[in-house]
Length: 419
Image (cartoon, rainbow, N blue to C red; front, side, top):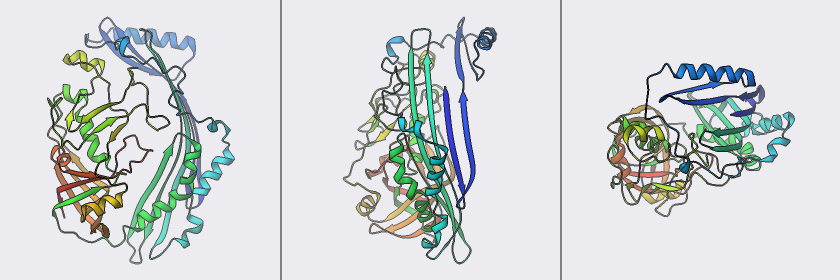
């Protein structure tokens, strides 16, 4: 692996830090006499590597045998990742960036100098943000003939802002964006901090809201909180350890027919796309959940050896919740469902991987007739993930492309929201 990152950090309208980070490392997985070990080093001189590998082999020989450890079948490994640029994730414009240009990007993102124009009933008391760009390049090889390369550039902007109302109450929020292509980040450089200000100011004047069963709309920015535990429950390690609330559910209709989740790992030019997993096994598009039916678990070579299950891929690469219900935006979805709670963030809480039960603190807004009425505070949403997803009534079509999971704004009915 090789990575290079340049970062320019801003604090209250001034350049606060500049970071340059270059890293090279090698990870080696060794299968020695039915034993297995994984080692890494950032000392890549040839003579040092020879000594490193010989010592690693000696170390593996001291471990207990584990016959389930093996390389993936060569028939399953990727064959079309030779240059690293097949997915269009590397932007040559990266090479033309200078320190002066990066500094310009960082300053153009800040609203501190013009914050007075934004302050209507509040004061912006702090603004912290970062512009960064990076290059990542990796090569995976094994002794069965695998050769695979992945090259990706990334351009990112992120800001966090704190505002204060006339009574001295403070509210904070953030906004961010990321993309593999320089041209696509330029609009966000202008709007990012202003968006964070809007999100922070919108929280002013929260009110208590009665608890009970209600309709919940979950913003696309934070909806992964409800999907990630489902994907984790389909993971091979959770299944093998019998620590999954979806154990023995493959092939069954667990969720409503209106729910389909695709894995879209080969999406051209989109952050998170990959042609292969960490073992070098080729990815492909397939339904993780097809009209409510769980199609398979994520089983790598090791778990397949431990359980006798058929190997698949080690994890969901770029899962996408397929939109349904005819709504394009979050506002469309709120109008469709009428009244309820809009969740825009989570504050702590936990979930049980074995049962699927969850309890999360939330922040957001009450809405009536599709229109936000006021921020809410100190509310808790509780339930079970299987029940939750069976109460899915509609989605928007607004998944953020900068996120690794393509999840639109979601609407659920009959959810327990406690004051």
